[in-house]
Amino acid sequence: GAVPRRWERRAARVAELTEDVCTDAPSSAFGELVALARLALPIGIVQLGMVAMGTVDTVMVGRVSADALASVALGNWWKLFWVVLGQGFLMALDGMVSKASGAGDDDGVGAALVNGLVLSVAYSVILSPMLLVCGPCLRALGQPASLLPLASDYSIVQILAVSPTLAFVVLRQTFQAIGMLRPVIFSVLVANLVNVFLNVSLIWGMPRLGIPALGPLGSGWATVFCSWLMLAALAGAGRNVLTPLLNRPKAPRSPVFRNLASLVRLGVPVGLHQVTEFAAFATMMLLVGQFGVVQVAAHQVAMSIASISWNVSVGLSAAAAVRAGQAVGRRDPAGLRRACLVSAALGAIIMGGASVVLFAMPSRLASWFTSDQAVIAQAASLLPIAGLFQVFDGAQTISAGVLRGMLDTGMLFWAAMFGYWAVGTPISFLLSRVLGLGAPGVWWGMVGGLFVASALLQFRVLHCMRRAHQICGVSDDKV
Image (cartoon, rainbow, N blue to C red; front, side, top):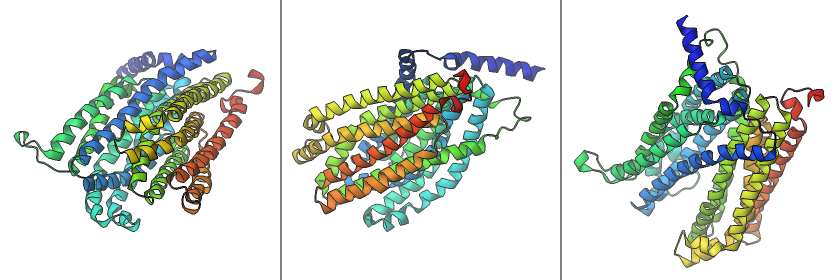
């Protein structure tokens, strides 16, 4: 009938668009490197685009007043804590979708997409109410009372951004897993351009256009609008792929939600891992904050510099998850091992090169971010530590991506808990407060925590590599 024929045309369209991804099984390390780089570069561009939106918000609100910037920063920190948790819950999608994509199972890709969208709505309903209690919770954490009204109002406005943000994560993870990044890049680019205009017009107003000045809250409303815009732009730009995946004629007859429980089971450890890491770095900031304004400013400068290369590792981690998942879907143990080794080697080269830069020119790098000589001197003492810091951070980020691709996420949360909270945070407190090393002591403690977390995850990756034939569902005699 008409429906099956229409479905066949749509299925053929999806197969045509994803053909390179589904059949991309390089037999050499160099071929794997090329395939990994083709994915990692656009994913990294998307990641930097997301960071750019937050940077614009910070710059715009900072022009209002220091108190406005501090208030919005607190409200945004509270929102991010819960949104990062929800995003983490959905990060298992890249492994599930890439596995189905590698196996040429469009029906499996569609089922994972539907399940992800259902969970994004569910998580939005569960997590959004937490933004209503921002004020009381920040007060309990001892934050300045003068900052809390605006921080609370900002957090409440952000409730409207939770749902589109999580739905965007689902679509982004799906497009990443099938190797189609152009729609994602397009949506992030559009949102960045609009975000600049909305921040200016909503914070200071445009009377000629009838737009009132909302002050710092205008930045919050700009974020809400751009969150919905990104979702709409991505859905529109990728409609040729999304439509056949979401309109599957088998849906009424097959259990569309058969993998829903698996997605929850795999995603919860990822979410807990990311929010544990987020909390550890927030605690790091609180510890540094006890040593004065110069130390806080220097800490922020050092983190901003280190985050540049870290965002590269995030892109590489996502690409590694896709490559590992596709190898599992192809039932290719050799390809899985190759994906693990090449992603680890490339990550080590990139993060090692970035570390050399931090060791070689810390003062010059710090001077690009501030003209305050006291801050530059303090930041210059932190950046060589950041050189070690980011090597281990990059290693654990990439290892986590590989494990997501192999659908082996159970270790993520426990590695983060042990590394950050049993090792890193206590050592940070001991070195900074008891031994009097100040901010550098805090950083050395987190270097230790990241080393332990990355080592645990790398051991897990090695264990999975030895079991590659089992993970891929291939018997020993066929390996």
